[in-house]
Image (cartoon, rainbow, N blue to C red; front, side, top):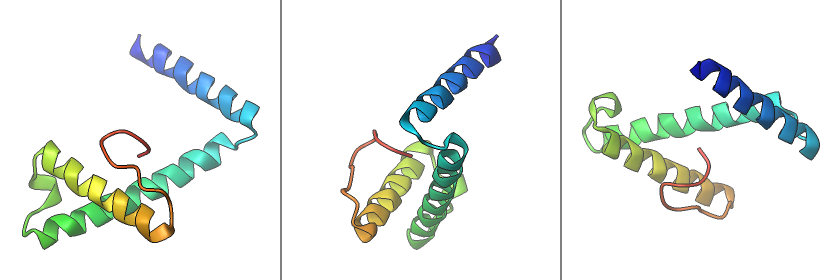
Length: 88
């Protein structure tokens, strides 16, 4: 049953993308690349703290990830979006 609801959400997201003139597949690919880059940076931050990202609890992982996101946004000239909300 859950897959049906998820399918509905994905279908709706694609419909919104089309209305906005956005290539949904390209947007998803770009988001995946950005997420992967930030995750790799978060792992580097963990190593700098003498820890392994994979072994840390979720709160520490999230903190490293958010730091990586903020650093990326600052270096790219984006307006930083602090906190736990916002983009991936």
